[in-house]
Length: 282
Length: 163
Image (tube, rainbow over all chains, first blue to last red; front, top):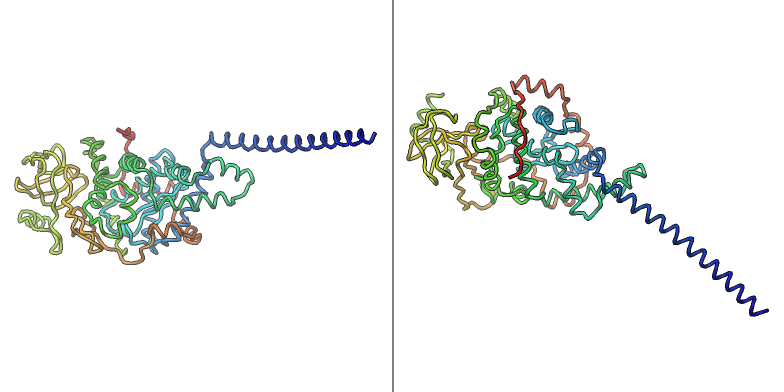
């Protein structure tokens, strides 16, 4: 009898134990399965446009943290006019495109996801006309159109960007994952994109500028200027580090443009207003 | 002004006294044209690797002087003679940079640098500047007006596929 009680108790305990273990495993399995399912679903999507814009705004705020805007409303508006006009000749004309001239004396330009484009005062001051500005802005805009930074971020941060952001969005608030993506996203600008992304931006950038009525040779002219510049100058350091050599970029454009772009001219009015808009920039 | 420029060009003198002599070389046999157009009269033909002096750039064309004569050549047929001897921040001396003043050499902007690799890795956000930036964004209608004033006409052409 005594033995039996022990046995029964043992059985009950064993059963309870088994039941508890089963119950726990079942819940865990369900949870893991659910998360996996969610991630699989998310991975099949890309980062949606609202998230792309939010991420880009975060990165733009960081870039502005390293260099404020040039304090010249006329120039800021002028660059927005040129950029917004270009945007109407792209496959994503309805993004919230905005353009800013950074106070920095470095020669560089940046694009952040969702349609925020920067050009530095240092680069702007070394451009000769509106077509060259258009060429630079159009190159940057291609990085947005083709989502190059999103791809670089996904690769570099070892994060399932689309999946993680989608999961966070389910909680209906911006949180640590967006913060992490913004920080990792900003670091992409110190490293640069894939060379093939830069070549794509050149190749498509000249087309966007030409569609908008500009001289197709605006961007090549800027590359000639950079190719002939003193590569040791510190104001070119980051741009030269993060881009293919200007000569390689010129060679590619030379090959694809051939004689097919000789008949496009920019109106002389655009040259005049470029000089007028930049007259006060020092 | 035009006459003055022509005389300077004929004399092979740079446009500005402070201008560094701008030289380049051809990367293929290149026709020297009377005007900056493909169908303009051909004055002479430069061989591959011919040395030229750059006088002026106009879109995809560069006005040059050379042992073979003067005129206009296609910009992408030229590459600059970078010396590679410069070190440090002694001015950028860009051969192709005519700048806004018409003189050569990169214009050195004054002010803060920022935007170094280190700056980007340790960046903290500036939401006030971002808010300010939004004020400068323009509407589609504004951009279309800007294009009309500048006599910019839209063109239809496709992207060139990657080669």
